[in-house]
Image (cartoon, rainbow, N blue to C red; front, side, top):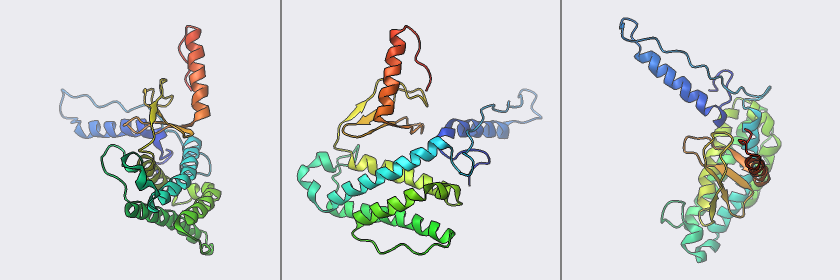
Length: 249
């Protein structure tokens, strides 16, 4: 269930941590103990969802980008499932951070599970609006592309519906899980400037891709296009040249 007045996305990670810490401190407070003082309420305000949506505009845009990228990830899973990737050895087939090689059957199972997830959300939204069942679709990779296109067309309505929060969270979970899986063999380049969201130096670009992502383990998960990042980097360089701090994004 969405927090009242708060976007459920990563934009409110700091607010949720502050709220949890306050609740913990309040539970530990004993008004009869003179050595304790009542915890001060935290002052951080949540980022609200956009009008007629369960998510703020930035998080909704991130979900749209991740949903679109699932199409490419599904195609790469299909490539593994056909056995074409096995000849490339461990570099193309390993799960990030492990020595395990993705087998064709394993990739096929992942692709089938992805299609099941996407198709399940499409059916849920169709049933919510009493729409007819989807037409018959072809091979899994093609079917996932068609389903993703349909979900993308109806994304604003989905995010504003009762299933919007769970849908957004699951798209993000699948995106990150499969992104790390199929991109494991491609070089990752750490970018030099700080993330505008969390201020950590955790921005990473996957060589050949068009996304720069924040890998902060605390859950920032900011996503930029390569052009957006290059604009931030140019502004940071210009600020240093002028002898002043870079402006906040």
